Image (cartoon, rainbow, N blue to C red; front, side):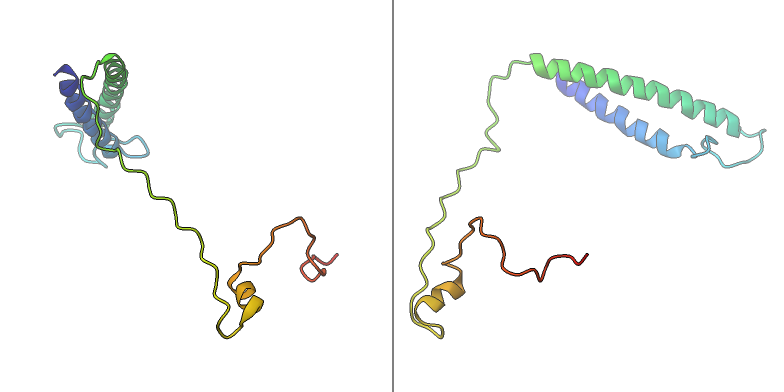
Length: 133
């Protein structure tokens, strides 16, 4: 019960933190781009408010993260979540040889299908791909 409550509070703090960060100007101007200082909140006051609230929300976010991690580590679950268990995939069928009939016939048909490929340490023939110096 406590874990779920703290998780919801953590989500709300994260949402508020994102909102406050996005409201700030990159130059540090704050909430408003200008306006008269006689208004409800001057540009300087908005910047101070947003900076202070960012620091408070960031501190709360880190503290809640550590607290939730501690609670999750010491929590004794009575059931096991099996929602991600899946059956193992079946083994692939073995490759079938290419029949000797067709346009190429015999060994030419098998080599055209790639069944006679070798991947030994033999050096490639010719220097056509070698860079010129």
